[in-house]
Length: 297
Image (cartoon, rainbow, N blue to C red; front, side, top):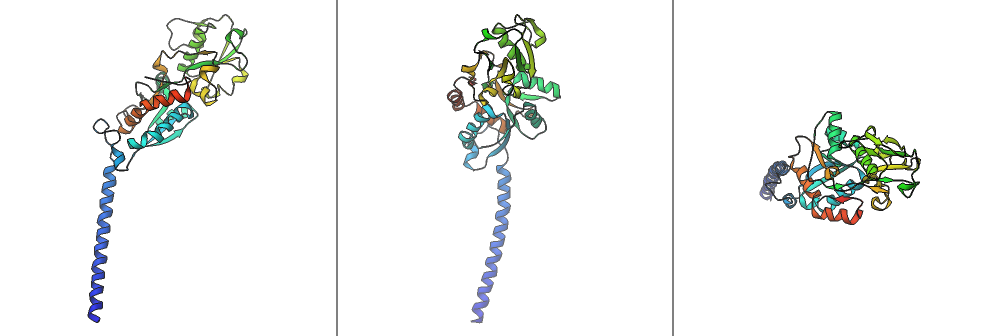
């Protein structure tokens, strides 16, 4: 009986030792495997969805404005990103400046809200370089809107007209006013500003304001030049409610994915861009926005 007890105890100690060693070895192997699986893979050398088979996804933080970029990215996040092995964390900004500041400070990896002229102008003013992916993703057309008038023919003399205060979107709004016959600009000026108005038959008064204030201040002005993202966010229909609308013939003002110069080869950002250019995204934009937002071919 005593001999049996000693044998069982020896067997228990040997088993316990083996289990402990096995556990330590497995933990080390798991750490090594996690490290290996977190190493990014260049999408040019591997299929887009290759990481999904391991269950490990590449994480990326992307800054957006709520509408439509935030909604489009949410569609990608739910419907395309899981299979592609991309874990998207969406960071929403209502202010363009904060979005680019977060990019500059490394708080986000990329953003999706701006067009190339805005990006270039912002970068020059704040002394840093960004990179924009082309072809772009979508266009938010600039429209002229009013709470007071149903037609531009009804606009009185000395009407107060608000336009965005950033250089590129101010140019776009002024061009729509010119195409509507309310003003005439100096020829071949790009970007144009209110100082470039050479004919103003109704003597309209131009007021430059931040884009985010366009909708809240709409009742206080006669006309407002507003980019499509703010219109959609306010529940208006760009193609139905606009008294005049920007042509979609100039894709330079289309929105795209941007990141810091030098990070454009990051496989995560390249994968994000490819997903946003997917045909399913183009169809989503067409179905949801009914022309108020236009997908770029």
